[in-house]
Amino acid sequence: MTGAGAEAPRRTDVAIVGAGAAGLFAGIWAGRAAQESGAALRVEAFDGARRLGAKILVAGGGRCNVTHWRVDDADYAGSTPPAIRKVLRRFGVDETVRFFADLGVELKQEDTGKLFPVSDDAHTVLHALLDAARAAGVRLTHPDRVEGIERTSDGFLVRAASGHVLARRVILCTGGKALPKSGSDGAGLEFARTLGHSITDHLIPALVPLRLPERHWITELSGLTVPAELVLRSGTGKKLVSFTDSTLCTHFGLSGPSVLNISRHWTMARFEDPGARLELSWTPGTEVEAVDRALVDAKGRGVGSVLRTWLPERLMRAVCAAADADPAATAQQLPRERRRALAQLVAGTPLPVTGDRGYTFAEAMAGGVPLAEIRLETMESRLVPGLYLAGEVCDVDGRIGGFNFQWAWASGHVAGSSAARALLASPAG
Image (cartoon, rainbow, N blue to C red; front, top):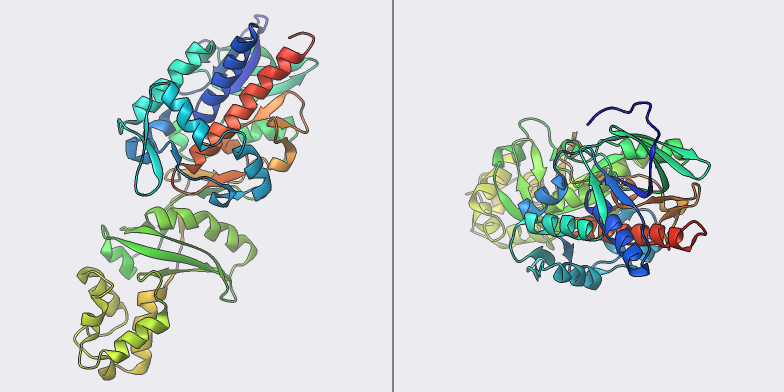
């Protein structure tokens, strides 16, 4: 595409910046609203990617976890639960399932509660969205990176790589900073800031693996996957939040659903409480005292034999080595301090986390434009009339399981349909 020249800007009615999950959804519903009214609205979605839908294609291991069977505000962090709930209620799981079914994409529910396409192929989801956008009359312009957005007397000047566009309404669906190779480089946050919005004090990777010190004993278990509980505690020891799920030991530290889910909470907590800490229980639901009691009560049996009740052999031996405890020794043969240290490592291993793997490996971003600055019934900015926001650019991030997609569908639906209806109701519409 050629750079912007001296030609007069072309015009569109709704310019959507970013054609990922939220952007495609916003375009579909804006286009459908216009078609249902019988009016002609020009809806155009801009994206810098040569191929659209990178995040959709990598989601769920290439299968695309479209949503979860049960979604509520408790599955999210960032802005306040009532604000998040207000948007989610506008387009819920049932509506999502029906929407995709109408496009020929049947979803199946797995034991985890996650909903995937029966094809187990994310391309099924992406192709359906692209086809629906085109059917709704959305012009998909890519690769065409938006480089800036300015207010005008009657709308916005969108400075795209291909030229300038005058838009009556703009919907920001640029995502955050996670997976930058997909095009999410934070530009949308700067657009929002330039137009007058504030951004949360902290922007951090969310749903991201955590690093441990080199040669920490857990890194020697690389490849081991077990169910475990991650617990975040305050500097005073108060339990703040916990997640129990599959946990993967890696050469750099820890990954897996439990780790990804707690990662943003750990980082955010450290801003307020430098003493906040993480613990890992290899025995979810069984406390340190219960493990210690089991060791003591198993008279005549080696501690390794007792721990095999909970732990696979490789993990059992690693825990014993870390506690400097011979697996063949009985609890009575171990000094009390060593036995207690062993029980602590089993049910509450302290994790000296050194950081995370950054946006390159994060599945989402925590932080963004506060929902307090957005009219939640329409997703229109309270500060910039005619500007709408949807998806990850907002200060909302969900846990693993399709929750971030559900936020994209809900907020995109509200933003797209509201922007179109506002134009259709205006004198110039």
